[in-house]
Length: 629
Image 1 (cartoon, rainbow, N blue to C red):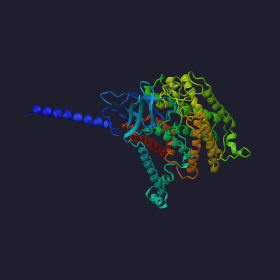
Image 2: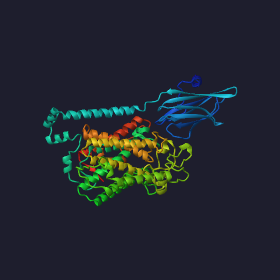
Image 3: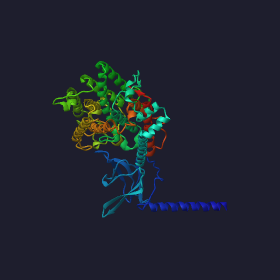
Image 4: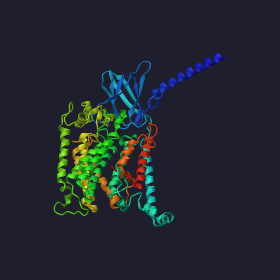
C-alpha cells in the first residue's frame, strides 16, 4: 500500500509539472502576457537598469545592438544574440539588462547577413520589465519582420527620493526661518532676556545663526599656526557662495545618490557636478584680490606676501598629492602610481599664478578710492591692462597647444572622448592635446585612471581632468573671479554699481559662450567640456558665477534678507571641510552598508554625510575655530 501510494504521488507530480509547462508555453506565445522568465534565467539588475525579454518568434537568429542617445557619434554596441526558432520550440527568448538612464536605440541585424531588420527607440524605466516581440514570416520568398515593445511590469519612480529630500530640507528651512523671526519679536526677546544670561542672550540673538560680530572679530588676536580664532572683516556673500559650491561638491563627491545628473558629464555638456569646482576657483580669485589689498593696506610688504603665497601653494599641493589621492584605490600608494595632479593641486597652481600676477601690478587701494575722468566707468579694467595682456597671451597658448599641437595617430585639434566616439575612428585620442601632454610629461601611471569618458564612450586610455593644459584655463577663470573682487573694492558701498557690473560681466561671458558653442552641446567651435576645461566651459561658468554672486550679494549684503546660513559656515572653513570629507569618506557616520540597488538609500546616506559636514562647520564656527593654510 505504501508503495502504491508513492507511485500515485509520483504520477500526480509528473502530471502537474506537465500541465504547468503547457500553461507556460501557451502564455509565452501570447503577446502582452506578464511572462517572468527572469525566474528561469536569474538576472540581477543594478541601479539604472531594466529587464528586456527579447522574443524571436518563427525566424532565424539575429543580433541586437544598442546605442545611448547620450553618446554622440558613437558606434552601436552588441547587446545579445537571439537564436533562431527550432522544431522543438517555435520561439526563443533572451533576457538582458538595458540602460534606463537615457533613451536608447535598439537595432536588430540578421546574424547571417548582418542586414538591419528593424530599429526601436525607447526610454526604459528603472527596474521595469519589458518584452520585445520580433516576428519573422515569409511571403512569396520575401521575409517580413515586425517588432513590438510591450511593458510587462511598470518601472519604479527613481526620482521620488529626490522629491522627498527637497520637501524635507525645505520644511526644515521654513521652520528655522519662522523660529528666527519669532525670536526677533519684542515680547519673545524680552522673555529670553529674563530667562537667560543677558550677555549670552544678546550674543545668541544677534549672531544670526552664529555669525560673528564684526567688532568682536576684529578685536581677536591672530593665533599662530594653522588654527586661528580670528575672523577678518569680510563680505558674507563671498563665504556663502564659497560654501554653496563646497557643499554641492561634497554631495556629488559622496555619490549624489548615484543619479547620473549628479555625476560629472561623460564628455561635452554640463551636469550639476560640473558647476561647483569652477565656482570655487572663481571665488578664490575674488578673495585673492580682496585679501592682498587688505594686507597691503596694513603695511605688509609684497615680498612677505609672496612668501605666504608660495608657502600656501606648496602646502595645498602636498595635501593633494599625499592625503587626497584617488590612485590609492590601485593599492598602497607608491611613486610608481602616484597621481601628480588633482583638485587641490590645481587650486594650488591657480592660486600661485594668479596671486603672483596680482602682486606684480597691485597697488594698495584706500577704502574711499574714487576715480574721475573719461575712463572712470572702466577703471577696474583699465588700471590693470598689463594683467589683461598677460592673461590673453596665456589663453593664446592654450588655443595654440589645443588646436595646433600634433598628436600621434589623432587629427589636429581633436577635442573628442576617443573610445567608441566619433564612430570609433580615434579610440586612443581621448582629450587630444590635453591628454597627450599629460601622458608625455607626467606618464600614464601618474594621471587619473578612471575618467568619466569611459562610462559611456568606453575610452580605455588614462586621462586627467585636472591636468596641465586645463590648468591654464583654470587660471583664466580665477582671473575673472579676481575681476569680481576689483568691482567689489572699486565700487565699495555703491551697491547699484556693483550689481550692474556683475550683470554686465555675466551677459558678456554668456555671449562669448553662445558664439563658441553655437548654442549647442556638441556642434560648436569649442564645446563646453569640464574634462578639457575648454574656454567655453570657463566663460559659461563665469556667466553663472557673476549672476549667482549678484543674487547672493543682493540678498545677503545689500538687503540682508538672508544671513547666508547654512552655507556661510562651511564657506569660512572650506579647506577643513574639503580635506575632511575626503579623508573620512569611508568611515561611519559618513558611510555605512546599504542596498546597492536603491537610489533612495544612497541619496539618504549622501545627504546625511553632507549635512554632518555642515553641522561640523557650524560647531567650529561657533567656537571661532578656522583652519587656515
